[in-house]
Image (cartoon, rainbow, N blue to C red):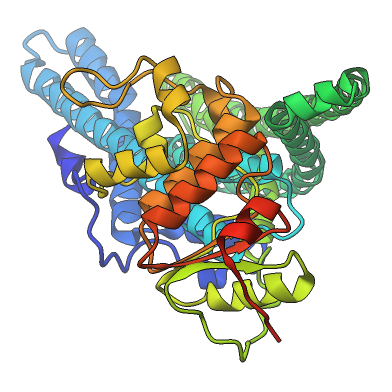
Length: 513
């Protein structure tokens, strides 16, 4: 609907003070509260839309009763104005609920996106500590979605609250005692549902940890599948994977059992509240305090309101347990790199233009890490990362490098055979658009290493530090790459940490303190 299109602009504003506040993420509870409370103006409109849209629907039985009583009791009763009231109620209900649905969906997407962007940038800046890549991926994807979607879970409880409030107002003319019993019963149901959130949180945390272990193992195994096969460890990895999945399955079934039994308990509480109110109404009918028709109205209006509250608050409590469990994992990832010690300062200045060689020693890596804090220094990790997409997507991921520079980098990294395998450069000079596969699995280990080297060369930084960039290449290809890199970056500083003879012969050894 147009009523919420203003909240989903094509480009989110750079200055967005209503978004998340990660500085407050000190626990799972605080993560959930911050993500739920983000964009408070939208949250208030979301709440009001549901309260008004659903609350007014509770008056439909009252209006219908007035129409029936009028048609039965009066010969010349004009019911058209009451039909008009019904139409007005339906229109307001539709607008309220549709606006609430739209705002809920849009806010979930925007809040989840903000959280995922923050976590991803944090991993890039500070690392992920001892977390495996699979655990990091699972936390950024599944856990952020779980917490973000909790805003959507608010919709059903808001509808229940609105309907219960409408029922309370509608029942006031029947009996103030019955009217007041409705919010009192809803409060009892809500408090019991809140109490059940504790067990759900505990079992959800164990389940999410087990599922993350499975995802992490699968991710790590798929990335190192060639190494696993080379070591003949396929059976061992498969056995461990089956063990982890069996553990996750057991915890999932435990989680479901807890959810089912607690859901049944919440339903019983709602049933007892319904029994108490209907019993009170029947007693008042026998005493002549309310009419049989009013008793019928109570029986038709109150049980649906409290049953809805039972289911809604149950979903809210279960969702809170899952969200807090995911929030704890988000908080752990958010603070994962806080304790990582920064690089020690170095007295060794960055050398001038040319090819420089550092021996693969601890002091060399410490010096390179210190140099890498400068804005003009690029120090890519030794671990090769190739992403799904084309070769241009991998070498020029941001699309801001001129095409001729990209081609020079590919040539220097000796990627001609890769280009031919992917279809070759067409008559118009365009790079091939064949996909490299997930994590570059369509390429060999040496080919992936050369693509990663081409990416580093295409960045064209003033100072480039490489960590043994040609370990997977044969001696002939390695010699060609060394010569091409030295020529391409003759007027810039290139530092290579390696014990390889080809690099040592082409460059100048550099001593560091």
